[in-house]
Image (tube, rainbow, N blue to C red):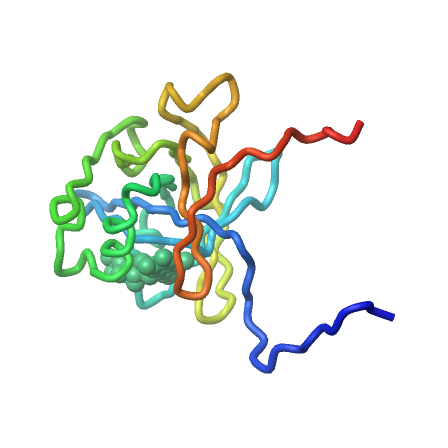
Length: 185
Ligand SMILES: Cc1cc2nc3c(=O)[nH]c(=O)nc-3n(C[C@H](O)[C@H](O)[C@H](O)COP(=O)(O)O)c2cc1C
């Protein structure tokens, strides 16, 4: 028997905290776009596989579907306003890079440019698209990974990246390192 009361939620939702806020870049020929994506995560360590889930009505969707490549950029908490704007404006009518002072850099030829102001970048090849419902899930093999040099020592230091988490319409800060895997052994 539980020792404290647990209440069922009337509206069951896919709610997990924390999930990261990312800026996903995609491109098709001369068209380069960025959108904010939080429905993202790791699927497999080897081969390194991640996913992004995108609604088909997004302008970016057809770019992703046609190009089968995406770059995940991890913004730092100082970029919160740009993150929010990139998630509330469309590349169909706006140059979100210019509007938000975001710098496109071609770090890996053949992949969508990364956003220089972000600190961690995953360059992905789409290997499968799952049409799940409201969102379609692009499964991506991570082919290249980069991070700001001052955030690697020798692993990526997320307390230096200071990513943003998102849940139920709220943004949260992350960052404090609590310990290392295996601390009980
Ligand atoms: C914090 C945040 C997270 C978001 N996560 C997603 C997501 O995971 N999938 C998605 O399809 N849209 C997501 N959006 C909405 C898109 O970013 C938004 O519709 C954007 O305007 C689409 O840009 P586009 O029209 O240029 O493709 C998110 C928006 C915000 C603000």
